[in-house]
Image (tube, rainbow, N blue to C red):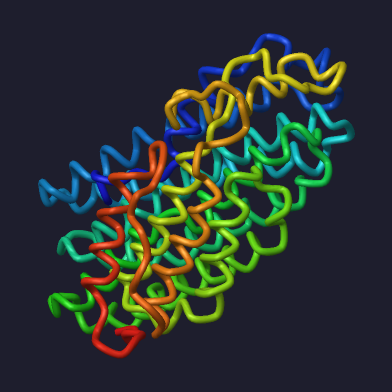
Length: 360
């Protein structure tokens, strides 16, 4: 699991749990109550505890404990997903749809963390078969959450849509660490012959999931915050359909670039979100809180000085990736500056002369 760049959605979930206001209760959300969100949080808490125990068991060589904790982590993660999806299915108002979206965010983030953990542990030599066997269902579970979350976009308040769209983009295509983990496991050559084929299938499934997420994001690009539309549109236009042609390290850099763009959005935090729909209570605040504090707060101006140049910069950068010019300024603004400079160096350094590097 990458300790250097955590998915934006992972941090967003921490903020989400802390930001749930008392007003998001059964009295304001109709058929969906805050208790359901609490149930999801409880399942996720149990799953996180089991994941930590799984890591310890693998490191200490305790096979029986590792298998037991893997089973708990999977069952608790799946339980969180079921509750969140049930909330989405029952949501009858904008408020209840927003609360369901929050629950789905928490469940989806847990799937993301579990997936990174499993792919990091699969080559550790302990409980490899059950760990490898759990990767595919975890990928599918995460995609199921993303599909339901996407289906809620038209149902949540208009003021919340950009935030939910950002969460989907980050969860779906904000980090390809699992692809790198699986590729590394295969390249080490130490996997038992009995699971090498399964791990190869998981690598293809994980790569396909990112490709599908990118296509999904293209479908709701206009719902994303204005600041993100041009740069993300440039990235998605140029790499969608070509994901499988990129080596995992380059794919990881591309998704990291997406993650950086989303993480640099100037979102207003707290429960005082300007433009909240009348009657929403604290629901808009839930998602404002999701993105605030994580991206450095913001003043709510809705713009970043010089942000119009970001699309051209990314277009130039990815033009080099796809066989065009490698030019482009790295004089970026706001929180993007240092991170994207490093991503540019990493991306261009991973290319062979002449354009795309074939996937391994």
